[in-house]
Image (cartoon, rainbow over all chains, first blue to last red; front, side, top):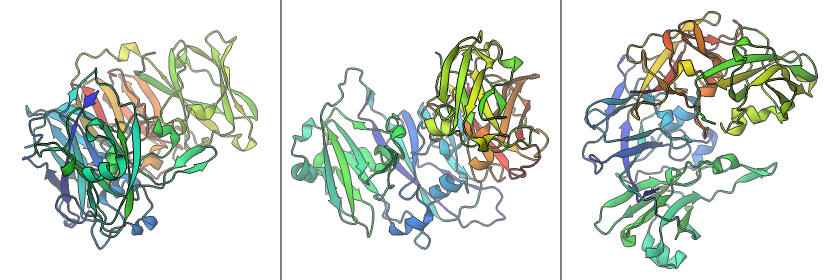
Length: 298
Length: 258
């Protein structure tokens, strides 16, 4: 059991406006000054934020979610009906490939398709190596329809503890969030949870959209209406997890009851103290209120 | 049962009547320890223009044991072997079976005249190995589809020649790394991969859609399977009647032992 695994968010901006005559494609390197530069990376999960599974006719209700890191828009404002990732998964219009290198300079993957790393993949490709960030890159041979940002979550660190016991109780809280609202865990615990913070040992986020039920089974969740981000810090003010969007640790990608049994989602378990005053959830939408459902385990 | 696989063969079962349709005999499957069977919904079958069955709603399969005098699985809904319904959680067969005494029961006349594509998965110890290391590498390969009639040979790969493969993933990309248009999932349902070692078919006519494993919770794992790139090929189903993938490229990711 991995305890207190750290997650960092890497955002790579990709461009659409290159000329057709450029026959070499574009390569984007990973940032080098990251907290996990010398840590073993367990896996890399590419998120397809909000609307990634919806037909484009429905996506107009989703107004301009903003990046939690630099405040830039996730979508191109002029045409926000589809994200880059949406193109990839829904229609396969574009291809994004990962070249991942180990610390010793040897190649781990060459042209690994992003489909093996998407959060909606039921078994994301595992890396389990320290990475050489000088060489690790993504490359896009095709021409993208829009500018966009690729969200890459890096799972690293943590320790294995076979003796660690799973939390036995849980409490589910629903927290209304107005557009762009950020709420600290201290507030959430004081106002909604009413248990001692130091008893909390696990968290996961669930988008509350009601599943539609037909022929006796849950067939479809309404999709990710929200873009709720989770950030946890410890008392050293270092990030434990940074801006994790709900679909990566949540369950809102689930499409049917069959998938609920799939052990694919990542609960966050921890055994040390979290600074709840400086940990928070936030709604990334500029104009859209949402309700976050958070399940605390203790 | 060890879930790792190293051999597969597609088998076409003609649906000639409402009622029992016995499976055709295949010499290659005789005395094979069958691990799984996939019933694959596909419209265009390999090397024939007969229409494939795309809905297994009104079909069930009964499987006879090796000797042929006992039905060990009776009237199992064929959808239980359809990976699109089971999310890759395959029904283990785990025995040698008698094809001639196994049958598909059909209760819907609309399916008569079509054929069901079954893929049998088994072990080929002579074409696989145990793990010798935990280290793996991943590489990609684009395979141009140039003909709907002839075999589309895999390009030779210097980096992957002689490697032992643990996983092959079909990825429905838009643009492949060599700037060709990638085939999508619909195309992949009608494309068939044959991997050969020398002149022996290690995998024979496996639909590429089986290797698109985004939603599957139990992915197909190969037991360090070996094959030659230059003699392996992809064919387009429908024997020339289906030309949609022609001019595009198939993109595969190979996971192999270092």
